[in-house]
Image (cartoon, rainbow, N blue to C red; front, side, top):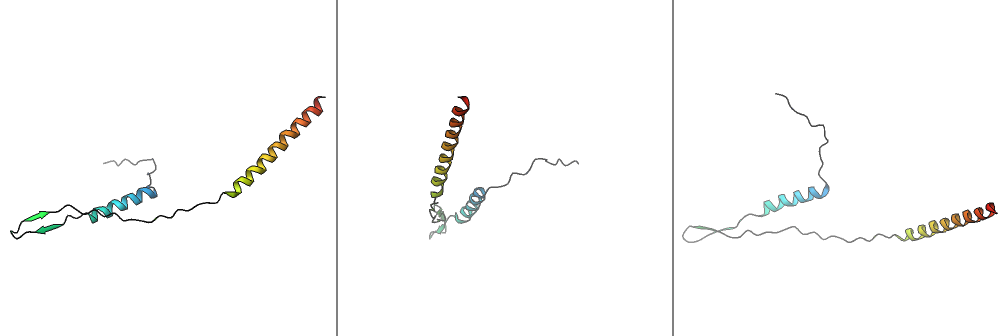
Length: 94
């Protein structure tokens, strides 16, 4: 019997897919129906209690103050280059 080997690379799970799969497994473990017993020895099922794990996420702000200074420098250099080209053009044409 011949075994066909795929030549394409196996698609790897992303971190988000791993977290989702982990949460799904935890949820399956936690969802267990609670069963009570009456005096007549009959079992009645109660709705399962769903509890999802909660995480407190921190909000982090990133300081991009250097971008403004870099943009100013770039704009200044661009203006100087265009002005130098214009000056050279008018000097060489006349």
